[in-house]
Length: 361
Ligand code: G3I
Image (cartoon, rainbow, N blue to C red; front, side, top):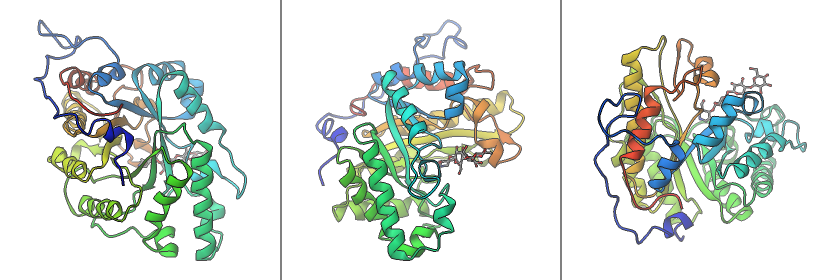
């Protein structure tokens, strides 16, 4: 298949130019070259990169500080939950697109693009579906209809779709899900084909976690997307979620891993970055966290067709982490009182110190 538009536009552009880092941000600079006091989205635009955040729709409605930063710092948004199947079709045949439409409107008003998340996943499925006792043929038709209706509803308004999310286990085997069990592994190619039919211009991504570095899981994703492309299945990109934890040590080799996906002719993106830590936070942990964010951004900036860098929420006030990993948290760029953390300043510094061709437009 042909390169996605974003890639075709830069296919002839030469290499990234990596410039030396400038000195630290104004908050920590003492005499060095200060990072210009500009929002992340502006600094990223200079690097032909979109920088995004997942958005919690309750916070967007109720919290003015959250709304202001969501609109001013980021050039893409991802619905954290409201495009998931359980939210869009809570009862069979009854659709509720209203919260997701509100986010798409917010994005339009703020000059932002939208990452659609997510069409096929094993999680956050409506209970009518998981307990419905459907035959394989019925489930296939239900999935086809869900993808078609959802993608058509947002046609022309969603830039990238996470079409299939988290289909692999850590050892590289396919995850046991309702989709694999009932439809077999072909559900993945079908999902991409159906999404492409519904909106031929949206960029279609496979998205997963613990695939940022090489290993059995990212090898399996690489094999999958390479095979799909060879078969003419319309997959445009691979999303690396980027959920890190400082207690595991920071990963190495991410740029080399992103590069092998780039070589397949695919777009890449960091889609859900956050770096959690055992609580309480302290200065050392926050510095390690900042380095974790920097490594993720660096891998993206070194990859010619890495087109967006998205954080999974920007404030610790609304993070998913403490609810899932008790005793852990402080994973985001701003603390609960919206004070920017070292990680925020590090991202600004990294974006301001780089200049690369290619990327998002
Ligand atoms: O919708 C119910 C609501 O009716 C109820 O009042 C409330 C009470 O707690 O719960 C609500 O559901 C919650 C849902 O988010 C929507 O807010 C669930 O309890 C909660 O578990 C769920 O968590 C989400 C999680 O995905 C579910 O797997 C997180 O917010 C969301 O950040 C997280 O995001 C995922 C990505 O989609 C995929 N990659 C990993 C990432 C982090 O887990």
